Length: 141
Length: 135
Image 1 (spheres, each protein chain N blue to C red):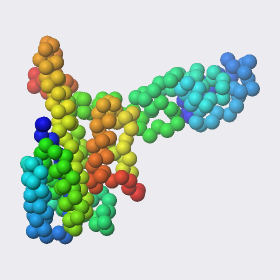
Image 2 (cartoon, each protein chain N blue to C red):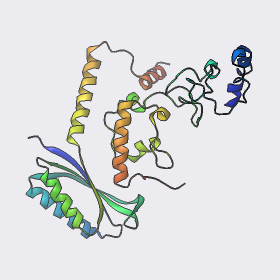
Image 3 (tube, each protein chain N blue to C red):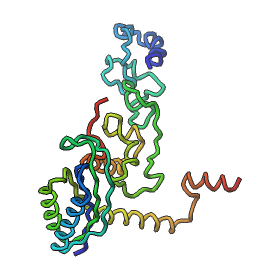
Image 4 (cartoon, each protein chain N blue to C red):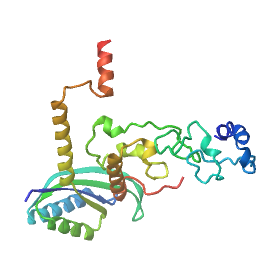
């Protein structure tokens, strides 16, 4: 992760001569790649190419921020759209299980690649299943 | 007024004898009939492990019912009965007719759309099947 951020960094101080007081600052490992979010205010972070990109929102590899990258690149296809499922039954726990974390939390859309409509239906189904003790609200690891 | 459809699931304690469970089901049928409702289907899913402890039980007997009726009063009555029944530890009613209506509408719309335009190649799993069949 941090190797990619540091690769273009040696080029940055050379080009950033007028802003030299900021460029040689030691790189923090959580330097954001997109949009200069919380960056040092210079144009250094935004110049980085690669998966960061300006303002690439959800679905891009690794998600919108370079900070947390647990799942590298989840498939972007909505499983329900592909299989043409029109009704997500809360009683079928095995269908809901892949969309729930080990801890019982519902996985966000950008991790599973579900479309927004199916994510809404899925959330209602998971909450109904939780109410009837088929799925847990929260589990201790 | 169209008939409404409901899903009713309730959980009994795991050590409840079969006779008690049948008695509860009979009571519910009776109450539903009083309120002009009908129990279309009853299923016993047997003893299952619960995802969390309910009333200090880790397992429970699941009973599932499919109901139809024209009045919401029926559900109030049934839930009242379930609340006072001792062996029942949890229950949930879900209204389903609106969702089924929407599902049917989507299916019909999709079929109509598929029939209208020239049928292109089927979605990926279908294509893979055809390719495998062709080769």
